[in-house]
Amino acid sequence: MKYPVPFIGLLALSLTGMAQNNIPTLSLSTLPSVTIDLKRSGPTRPGVFTHFDVIDQRTDTVRIGIHTFVPTIGRSHNNQLVFPRPAAAEVAAFLNKNFATPGGHWSALIVLRNLWLSDANYLKEDKVKDDRIIDQKTHIRLKAEIYACNDSVYIPILRFDTLQTYKNSNQYNNWSSYYSLWETDLTAVLSEMADSISALAPARIENGRRLHREDILQFNRSRFDPAITASNVLSAGVYASFQEFRDNAPSVQNFEIQQQKGDRMLYLKDAGGSLQYSHDAWGYCDGKTIFIMRDGKLYPLWKEGKAFYFFSQAYKEYKLPDPYINPQGQSPVAAADILLSGPPPPGYRPTSGGITQPWVTKNAHNRQRIYTLDMDSGSVY
Image 1 (tube, rainbow, N blue to C red):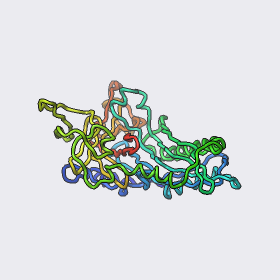
Image 2: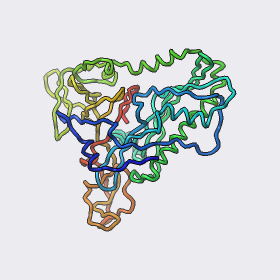
Image 3: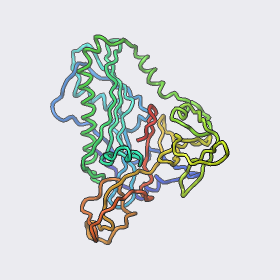
Image 4: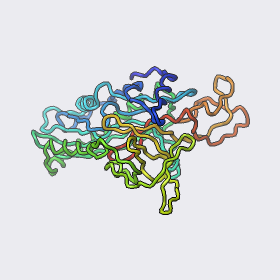
């Protein structure tokens, strides 16, 4: 593993840089990198395929995730998570080393549609639906299509789609173990995929439909052809749904955007011309910039390659003593100076009373989280 040097002050400035109209400006390539290594534990389990080929059809082929490192005191900052090599080469090498069986008749083609490591951030409405969500710490998303190949014939074996959630009491500010756990968990997810396709392959090969490689490639390329990415002209208006965003076809034109305490808010005009606050729209476009709605506020999207990203505030809730002091016995620390986007820092104790109260992080330190948009489903993570 390679860990970034935390240039916290400099990085904080780069992540909050604003262009005109308060639009954040950032290239993800400027983020410090953390290298994730795939590590096989235990004996290998050869399957039925002679070797594995991997094609990376993700919207972002440069990195495999973004993690917000949260120091105990100070500003949070974002790291990009990467493999030592391109994802296709790294996953193929791992599978060939641990699961290939020389001498067989069939090879495997893996089409990566999604592979992303991220913090388990959520909205207030998510907590209302399921209070257990506050226990989630990280997510690993893996979506892939697997085909058996013999000469020019390809047979679908499995569409693998999983979300792995880490819920244990690992601290966000524990570098020595945090990324090691991610490496172990991602290795386990890929191993599960390899075991699944080995078990399913014999029956699917015998009975599955036959395809050509170009059919598979064309199907996956079509994911990147929505009008919103293909057109050089953005249509202005409010998107009522994710599909309207994909189609570059906002259906609502009678609206007004208002700035309230630094946040963009959407108001729709009814038949009588009155303005009604809306938090149900998907987003809107002013003809130059696309905005996505999250928790009733509008955040500008920016595009890198074929992927869309945006800054937004995380919502986390914990029970913490207030006021409290740090373990070194220094002066009491103001709540606004503590980043509470992970579990409470170990060793903190109340200065008086021991009375705990809910604490919802809404301070300025915690506003610059980077989220990505799943162009298949419209999900945000």
